[in-house]
Amino acid sequence: MSHTSTLPGAPHLHYQNQELMLEGVSLNSLAKEHGTPLFVYSKASMLEALSHYKRGFEGRNARVHYAMKANSSLAILQLFASEGCGFDIVSLGELERALRAGGKAQDVIFSGVGKTRSEIKAALEHGILCFNVESAPELEVINEVALSLGKKAPISVRVNPNVDAKTHPYISTGLKGNKFGVAHEETLNLYAHAHQLAGIYIVGIDCHIGSQITTMEPYIDALNKVLDLVEQIESQLGIELHHIDFGGGLGINYHGETPPMADDLWKRLWSVIDARGFGNRLFMVEPGRSLVGNAGVCLSEIQYLKPGEQKNFCIIDAAMNDLPRPAMYEAYHAIVPLQKSVGAQANSVVYDVVGPVCESGDWIGRDRELSVLQGDLLAVLSTGAYCMSMSSNYNTRGRPPEVLVDQGQSHLIRQRESLEDQLRLESLIPTTP
Ligand code: LLP
Image (cartoon, rainbow, N blue to C red; front, side):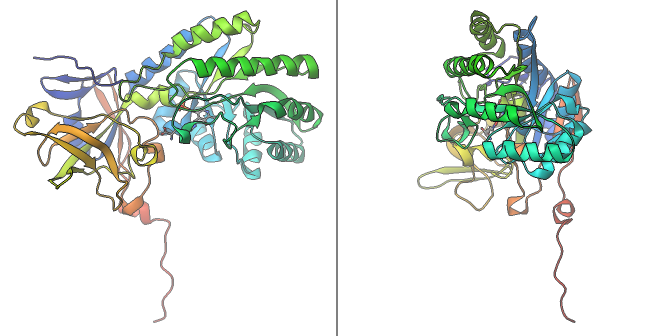
């Protein structure tokens, strides 16, 4: 007997004969082969997510620049590069990753509030597409570095439109109190100033209002504000903006959220854009989570079931160092057994699913009803974005391996980090004999 279930957000994840499969590959067998914790990603899910953007951009002058901070594993970058995506980066390390994965510097946008001189220099030497400038002092530094190289730096100003993205405060970026972008009211002056600088040429405008956005309204508000600015910059300053970068931020289904699909969102946005006469302008987006988030699962083994007076704990071998989102944002990730039949022998109990790290904040899921036994395998869902890329070695835990499944085949794309990998850069101080 086989059936498809309604697992949140994961289009290629389903139970077949009580066993959880991702794109036709048994997750149980991958856990046996590679051990746990283990990240597994579905290529088809990523392509499907990308196809919504492609559909939304059909017949339009628009491009996807994958925000690689969401998941910067080389094989995943390789996939997006081969699909024609550019990249949104926030460090020189990310630029090097993009290039090694087959990306081209001229398709790279450099975001972030704290670009260093050496990063700016390297990015200019590589010939990136655009710097998204986040402050007046940063503009000065980019100008200086460009002049010292005898170059002109292509820039956009990232405007902070003061729009509430209605998401978690830690991942909201477009409000006045955020460190990101240039205040809407100051943008015009900064463009006028940038126009005077010999090491700068202005190519566009940029805006990113937050992450895990689940409704269209904040986007529409931000779009109108950005287009108001474009009109002012072009008519009052006579500066022509080649592109409008509208950032990332589209949410995914972790726990029943119903964010718009990228094509539906863009249908709506194009209607505003067309009505305001900007239909022929080049638009760019920087999605991260919506391309990879629901494509990944993290497999983990139950080490102990620990009954308590107030809480029952299900202690697994994945922890906050592998899956930092619950500890950082109280984020919800669904947790399901890899084999349903095993659970049938167990009582259904409400557990806090926790890791072995020595922190009370090391929880992965709270108050989850599970029918499980010690040694069972679980999958933590929607862990393709901001999990592996935010993982750490806290408690001297090696980071998990990563596997990409593709039409029934599986590829190990990153090995498990060994203790030697972790210790390689460290040394003892000399001791006197
Ligand atoms: N562009 C810029 C300038 C950004 O700062 C970000 C994300 C993106 C694009 C991509 O946003 P996305 O499409 O992925 O929402 N670690 C947090 C999310 C932090 C997002 C940071 N910036 C989390 O796990 O929820």
